[in-house]
Image (tube, rainbow, N blue to C red; front, side):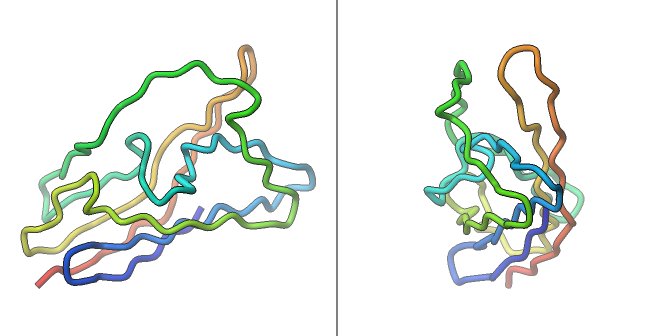
Length: 125
């Protein structure tokens, strides 16, 4: 997992890259990648200074089915861009620390993977 960001006038656009460095395909929950550009759950930890900025988007509980997964083949990377301003209050000026952190659930009885990225800093003036 790797993230980077572009500071735009009214938003912080975060680029999320999830690479499969393994030798077999990886099943990634679609809402962990947010392919529509809108976070569908709390996947980012955002701080302005030392204060956490909380997710204000919709939280949806759902049952996982096989159709909810994206296959990331071995050696491939999935990438998306997400505007944080859609679900976090990033209007105030300040220094923002951002990282991606969530779990990739599996179908019943299978293990759960923790997905965690690097930390980035964006200054809003």
